Length: 235
Image (tube, rainbow, N blue to C red; front, side):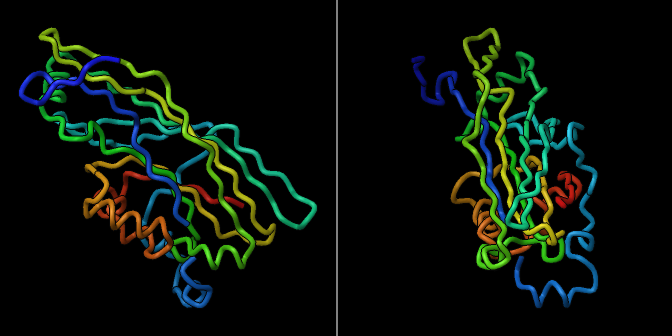
């Protein structure tokens, strides 16, 4: 294992892709009361399609925002005997950003616990923009994610003894079961154009969404990146 020096020297650090997982209806009454579906009202982009890469900007320490490619692959929907459907797919995140020697030095010297803003997968109700597990349990909806898989860390050097390393690809398999008559599910993917360390205000607010306590429009993911996410309907 390679050693890690203190920040007074050239900091050597390895970091896996950070990832936020899934959120998911506030209440049925609120859904029916809305003048228009919540996810349509807040104006996010419904341009996510299977096997078509989309771009989302991710914060890079010491450098700024860089594009991350996200692709939904192996999308399949099957009808089950119990009147439900099962949709499975894999979300793949690819970092095209490969820093120059100058950028490596900036990233190394600016490191303060994270290299990237990270990325996320979100499943919400179209009408409410949230996912209340008690409501979803009553409807018979379940969402499961596999363990995240990462490529080997890629190491970048600056020529002066400083370096950073991180994986260029991550992926997760998602399995969703739901009543065949229910047309309300949405899948969202994106990266963070801000840093989101555990314990920060951004982390706390976003986590409340992932626990079904607030809609997507009340998150940092939306407030600091309204057009930085991509969505699709699951039917």
